[in-house]
Structures are given as C-alpha cells and as structure tokens.
Length: 216
Length: 333
Image (cartoon, one colour):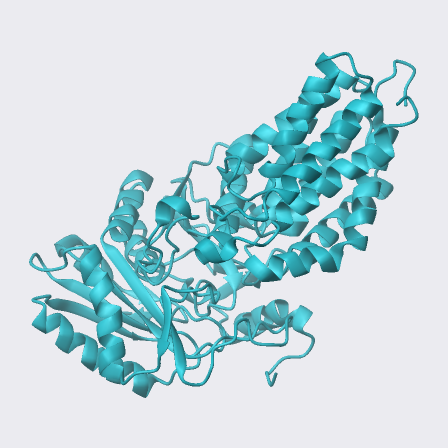
C-alpha cells in the first residue's frame, strides 16, 4: 500500500497472484461446474491464462497500476481463447483504462472495477440474470460503491463486495442460462452454479486477501 | 479412445505440419497457427479470413486458396482461436482492399474476432468487416440463447463470398454477398454418435445405441430432442421439415442443397441421404439448382449428417460455379 492509502502496483500484482493461486487450487472445481453446462474447459483455460499473466509480470514488471492491469488483460486475451479469454481480458483492460496515476485510491479502485464490469457487459452482451460472470461482478460493484458512499473504509467495503459477489454466484444456481454454450441447454441449465460467476467470485475473494489489508 | 495421434496437446500443430507438407501452394504460419494461400496478400483484392476451433476439417484451413479464403486461423480443438492469430491472419492478407472476417456464431468466436478487429483498427488503417453465420434452425428460442449457431452455411458462404472477392468486388459488396448467403441459408443436423475430443479422451456426450440427437451442434451441443434411431427416409424428413418450415425455399432460381457428413459417416450413407432429401424437396416444390455432398464441416469422429439449403439467384450461382482451388473444394481450374 502506498503512502496515499491507495493500491499501488505491487498491491495489484499481489491481487493477480492471489487470483492465480486460488484458480489453480479450484481448477478442477471450475472444470466440473463447466462440464455440467458448458464445455469443461473453464478451469484449464483460466489456469493457463493466469499462469501466463504471472509469468509475464515476473519477466517484465510493469510500472504503474494501469500498465500492470493492461499486461494482465493482454495476456488473458492472448492465452486463453474461448469466451473467458476475451471476457476476463476485457475486464482487466478496461480497469487499466480507468486506472491512471501511480496508485488507486478506494474510489479509483471502485471506478476501475465498475469500468471492468461495463466492459464485460458490452463484450458479452449479457445482462444480470443471464447466468454469467456479470451476476457476481454486478452486485459486487454495487456493494463496493454503496459501502464507500456510506463512508466505510476500503477493507470492509471490499469485504462487502466479495460477500455480494459470492451471493450473486450462489444465485446463479436456479437460473436458466441465456448466454454462452450453456444457453443451448435451456431449462436443463437450471440447478447448476455458473462457472464464470464462480471464477469472478474468486477474483473478488482474492482482492480481499491481497488488498483489504488490516484497516478494516 | 483409438486415434491416430501422438500427444493430444500437439494434435493441431502436428496436423498443420501435415497441411504444409501436403499442400506446398499454401503457406502455414506455425507460430500463429494460420494457413495462408501461398500468394497472400493479393494486391487490390479483399482478404478473406476465417477461423475457429479445430476439429471441423476441412473447415476452415482446407478452404484456403484461390477463389475461397486467403487465411484461416486454427484454435485448439473446439476452442476459438485468440485475437493475436486473427490479427496475424488479417495483416497477412491485407492487399489494400480491406478484409472480411467470416465468423461462426459461437460466443467465443464472436468475441475473439471482435477484439481482433479492434486491435487491427487501433494499429492500422485496414478496414475490417465481420459477417457472422447463424443458420442452425435447431436453436428455436434464439432470443433466450446465444442465438442460432453457425453451421453448414459457413462452407457455402466462404466459397461464394470468396469468389466475389476473387472477382475484385469491393469490401462492402463482398460483405453484402456474404450476408445474403447467411440470410438465405438454413441448416439442421442429426448425430448418431457423440464425438471424442482427444484431450478429454472420452465421448463428449452419452448417446445410447438405439437413440440419436436431432438438431445437434457441431461441438455436440444438445439438439431439439433425442429420438429413437429410424430409417434414413424418416431421418431425412426430420431434417427437411424444420428447414422448410423456417424459410420459403420454393420458387425463384431454386436452392443449393448441401448434405454434410459430421466425420464418421461414410459417403455411401451421405448419398443415400441425399437421394431421400432430394425426393422430399421435389415433393415440396423446391427445385435443386446445385448440390454438394460430403464431409466438409465435421465434428471430429461424430457420426451423422446435416442438411443445409441455400436459396440462390443468378449471381450466387455464378459465384458458386466460379473456379476454386483449395484442398477441400476444387473445380474449374
């Protein structure tokens, strides 16, 4: 954390490493969820992309939050393929576009995450309730904004966001998919947790671990 | 799983080595997994680029050559290529007249091609237009899904729009031809067996001996319904009916009828199916102007077939008949 109390490049890099770590840990779980309603490659694809993102950070450490988020986004786009590559790639690239300056204060982080969400929505043309990543990221952005607006410190606000993300993930279970390959199952997609919402909830949990710090 | 492979992880790159060895008139960029026609870029000609997950051969790499595609990007089996590959393909075929991206309507393919087009726009003045194919009538509630899937029409579009590009038509006109083909084509498929993705090592879905999946997608996506296996004559009816119900194919200059094998069905069965289908079309008052029978858009080792009908006019017929020289389609040269 920087002097100004914001998230600096090192903190954001730690977030990406933590995301890569939990995805590696949950790889088989993500793939099992995807096998039920998709094409059984979400765990492997995310693991491949995030391992490459961490390797890229190690090989050429970016200077500044924007540069770091851009590097992660470009790596996800280049290495993942399928649907999750462009979606997670766009999430990080739009965050990068929003993250100017040497660090991200709480409002700046929330704005960047919101920009990332908007990117995912426009790239995937998904709305809330379509049983996608948006169902975890959308409520998380709302919770983060609301908590910060109410004067909550960054740590607890981020925890509230992650809680909302997990609740959104759980709420995908009864939904009928309207986007992606799962949508071809129609009613048969109900009763399964969405793998994209699940990995997005992990991204938010990783943010808590890496960024919430001890202030809350 | 019994397959002619080494390590499943090397399947696509090793197959591309075979393409390069067998077809010296093509140029293969092994790093980006892109097949180019040997003389690309052709100056003043619209560049035709397509691509998608591997496992549908000869689509798309087998349709690269004069009169059809200028480049095709191969992803992993059933996984969309990444934008970097599409950018490399687009750059490599840019002869100064713009580039057409032919994209099948699958979430991953559409998004990766979109990102590639944005990346090209950010770094060069090359004009890129994308045409998305979505001809699979098996998907009924397309408002509540990712939409109809791009299937057999893609082959016909690559040939016909490829001929328009070869004639030197400008990008907007080539794109109009492509959109017309997609708008006037409809398809429906049936699977008798699942396919086995080499990396997975087991069949994608479970289809009991006496059953078939009607309306299956080319990656084994579930179809309209699972029904008992029936004589070919009845299966032909199950394919023809929903296609004719979706678009009026009677009158005009007739149709191009395309019976496509999904990979494991022998040609003798495809021709038997063609006979049944031709009889049904005749009875329905649909005149067949041209036909194509064979495995052109496969789903690995899936058994089954698909039917595609395309409403044609004089222009589309002339473009279909124009010379083509690719590993998969070759005539008039």
